[in-house]
Image (cartoon, rainbow, N blue to C red; front, side, top):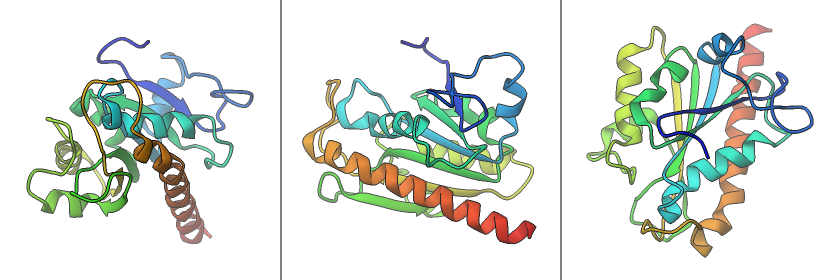
Length: 194
């Protein structure tokens, strides 16, 4: 279990996690973490049932060999604005979260950061939500950011350490949607530098 207020950080294919990866330490690689160009942040509270779906998705991505090289994946938990240093210099930020749109439980949602900011209340199920993080990033980032939020409609955010059956069934689709977004960004970046 990690300490409250800490961020668990992984970098795809830079010597981190699993056979090709290991958990990044706080030493020499921290500089790289603060300047990664693509950051994935799973947010939520894993002891509030479906609220933790973003964290569960990020953890699945951490060991997935399909994640493009150089992508930083963060288990952001519930630390909110403390995530700013990890995302403020990134060109692309992908947030994974439980998003309440009043849809059927397990429904996937994709929206841009701008879309989320335009909605009153931010739609995240957290008190200090993803919308607050996005608003802060727009203030502190030195360059335009492509921010995408992928969410799942929660069924239950009461105390509980497991996901509801509807959200559990949607978890693979959320991970696949995240991988598709990362691949799209990779392809678009490749066209820009070619």
